[in-house]
Image (cartoon, rainbow, N blue to C red; front, side, top):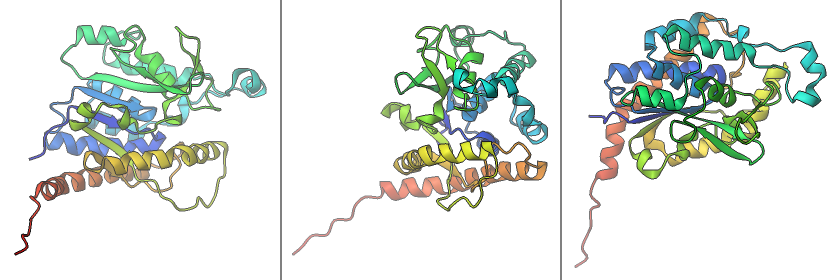
Amino acid sequence: MLIPPKRIVFTGGGLRSLGHFGVLEVLEQRGLLKSVKEYIGVSAGALVGFCTMLGYTIEEMKQFVTEFDFSILQSAHPELVLEFLTHYGVDSGSQLEKFVISLLRVKHYPIDMTFGQWHMKYPKAPQLRCYATDLNTGKLQEFSSKATPELSFVFALRASMCLPLYFIPLKDPSSGHYLVDGGVIHNFPFNTLTEEEKESALGISFLYTKDNVTEISDFMGFLTQLYNCGFNPRTYQVQQDNKLRCIVIPTGQMSAYNFDLTKEFREELIQLGRDAANDYCDTYLKKILELKKPVRRYSVH
């Protein structure tokens, strides 16, 4: 029998993250979400954890992501393009912020709710831990009820999803440091957990192909491949170091920011998540039992 994890760690990945919902569906069906105390992630992975924490059902989230026009989350302006050297981005992130606010509003939570307020009001409910990259220090900035109780969910998610060179970076309200997407340093933040936390954690990540990308045809595709060159090797190493605790979804070469995905392709991504989760659950016990087999010792006479 699988032991329900206490923490689930989501890799960032733009629209690849639709695969997370297929995994969550299988975990729920197998009774493996009932003990989760914390959702952890960066970028789109943080958003998935946030929605799950707020109480959106797996069915609600699947229906939404297969129908929603993600392109409306973009708000690039010609003026910002001309002022790129001043603002370090071409999109203010205003549409993305409105989206996160709407997620809170639909579930009747205050739109300015902070990590500390959530923990105080719902101490037994799952919590959120997400990360952004502090450009001034070159380190991850943690957002959680312990690290940043006074910060709002909206700010933290905006920072965690702040794709560099596209979105204008946010400034940390206490330090004044620039904050961008947490994936710049760790797109799969499994190694931010303590060794004790890892023992009861489950990671959900993506299998990145090592094949050459045949075509880079637009700016978002260029950015995607630029970041892939940096964080894919690190993500792969984390996966290898934690094989028994990671579900890896084979999404192939797809662009993380292709907002023109058809409904059929979105459903295919969700199915890839289901398949990966079922495969993991079906083979997990076998792997554990093999590791626990006593070593046969032979005596020499």
